[in-house]
Image (cartoon, rainbow, N blue to C red; front, top):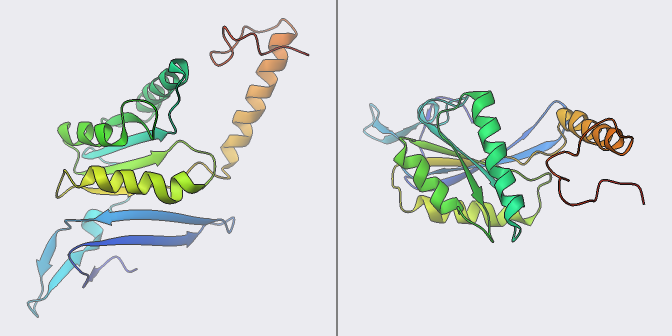
Length: 201
């Protein structure tokens, strides 16, 4: 799609596919309920794509980090800690946690909080490794339902973590920390604390 003005219906959903340099397919949903429509010389309504699909997170963007949700309170609280780290690291002003199910806040709650803080575009980032059914169906559906209460607010559901090179470093760091712990050279990490699981069997 060119980044100029193209004629499109007033209500539609964009499903955009692109190939990264590693040839991995990425699917991105963008729900555009209320774009800035302009009249051209032909008196036809046009869509200013550039104005609503701007690159990069801006001051008026709300970011929602959404995980599956758990009946275990400690697991849900860890998402709050990650969101706090994410906010501090990126400097993004509007970042909210959400759970797809089993716990609060819901995607609907987080969407509303973003709008209350001044967001005019909401970026939903699934905290999932791979693109399963929750990414294909559940999260887009829940986000669409949440957006119905906020006319004029655009949103996008980004790809999950997937095959990202930095995940290699994360997994390797976790392995080495656990091995250091059982060797007596490091304390338990926050994940294992109180579980007595990080040990040799």
